[in-house]
Length: 91
Image (cartoon, rainbow, N blue to C red; front, top):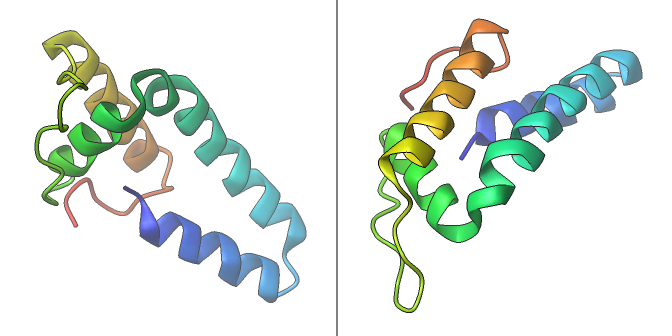
């Protein structure tokens, strides 16, 4: 869902910026543990859709997430943009 953030995390670590890498990891983990993990596969697919990728609907027996869950995921991704973790919401 946020590949560019994980690339930046790896680049910081390889450049010897362990403090910067850890700060970025903490921001990412808050999002992953919070909204995305709670909704599991359907949430990840919805987050991909929010970013302009093709997540699509989950396969049965999984159910799509609710509109409220989707809004929470979109808000969390927008928070990552506001914090500078992501440059933009759309890929």
